[in-house]
Length: 429
Image (cartoon, rainbow, N blue to C red):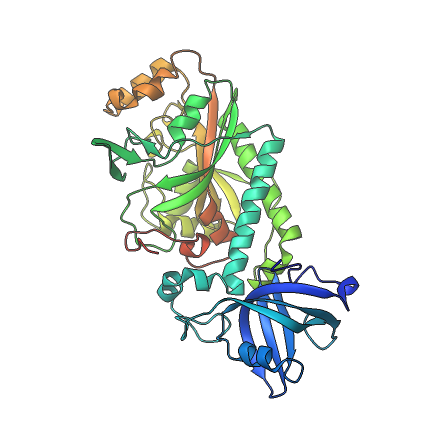
């Protein structure tokens, strides 16, 4: 057995006993007759102590290893109040599992600044850094807590196709692929499939979804491949019920992260204020009134980065909804009352992290709306079919995982929040 304990699993009951630990060599201090090796695993660091006169050959091999080589070490666990964990391993046996090449393309613990592209080009080594690993431990926690909340509320997890015959929102910003000689597309979102499922009797669904959008952005908040928590729920009276799920899920996840990810938050120096629900609701008309006092902004225009940032400066809260958008500003499937869509955006520190709406569930009204926009209904035949045989009122949202993390942890670039970022310039690793 290569490992009996992770670094955080050793306790006083293990003192004096033989254990096995494994990980990456972070540092070697050779003092001649004794050597101290700092070994790093998923949960932290531990000290391995080697005494030359006890096993000269083992000592020689150990101190000759390069940093970031991988070993499994076995020996006696001994109490030592002077080291970080209060214990050390007196090594008796070692298995070298992998030799690391030198020099390393970037350091793991070195206090030398490494540019962001170098980090992304060497993402696997970058993930060995405490700060980077902490982001993805919190990401893991967020998805788990959000799923936990949704399941408690009766949502079931589904998985919809990522390849489709038509773009999900009828736009042109899609990745086209060859599907055995036929044109196909990577989905922009699971939107159409979520809505179709509302006619199935599975009336509350969620998905940890992938978005593929061929937008030529080059900003710190956009990706061409991103992830989201997408939900759809049926038998609703208004979009307010959907908004309630969005804000309660957010509050639940933030509280759980604060309670259970304190070590990671400390590593990232992330201080979180957890606003209570309900989050404030601001209508689009009110937003226009605020913005027009500062800049030239016309009713009906979309909110860009500059507008969102300016609005955030003028408001006293971090998390808030913008509601009652112009119909023209939202997709064809959004329900509307007159010139207003029954839609909303959830903003977090001046950035949209979620967008949703009550949907059109009436077949004839949906057809009329598509005709008004000049859409080719043949491309949506399967989607429309679901509305002809009993579709209840429904709504949902898409909630950007990377955007949420970027704002929660006060990170400067959204690429920090996804393992292998894909943008218009990066297709590797």
